[in-house]
Amino acid sequence: MSNNLPKSMLTQVTRAITHFSLIQPGDKVVVGVSGGKDSNSLLFCLNMYRQRYLRKIPFQLHAVHLDMGLGAEIEPLKDYCRRLDIPLTVKATDIGAILFDIRKESNPCALCANLRRGALHNTALELGYNKVALAHHLDDVLETFLMSLLYNGNMKTFSPKTYLDRARLTLIRPFVYVTESQILQLLPQKNIPVIHNPCPANKKTKREEIKKLVNDLSFQYPDVRQKFLTALHNFDPKNLWPAKENQKGRWG
Image (cartoon, rainbow, N blue to C red; front, side):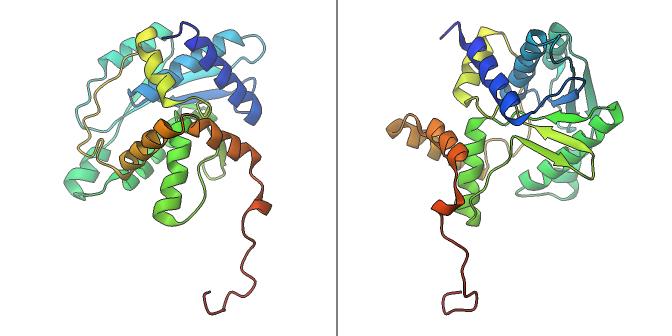
């Protein structure tokens, strides 16, 4: 395990922030923290970034945890935020009850994501913050692309930065150059806690199937993630098919 890992991850986060103008001086950034490995690691790395560039790019950080009403034990998360000296807001929601008691969803993930997104955005606005940082990493970027391709027949993935007109918020993803493997190595190095996810649908999603596919690919092609990242940067629409000229043709 490399002792230079935090430094290399800070470099990747700094590169993403620079390439996509994710954080500007004076920004007030809410970090959505579920208590899982990804969001807790993002909080750590953004705190490193803030300390490194405090004079050049001063900005504020505030952690927000959405209490789903499923009985998650969040004391370790509270202790962690105190250790980093980052304020934490725990927002009570009835999302768990809506999903599993009222609607009794058999495939709750899409609705859950929408409900959590709305609750997080509203909390950021209530706090007076202008940006929300999410912990999607490079593996997530690739998995989202493959899910869209295999399940919907689309070639797309999420952007490092998205402005939401209605909410007047900007979503940023500073971890888009960081791999899941790096995050897993960082946890024990920096004593980053991970709280148990009590959601009944945890680890039972289509994304888990795609995650396995990516891991299987990486055995034969170890640099598949970096090659995908290179492809995203080098994408040229001319390398794909043009639009159909005759939409009403035999095969249209």
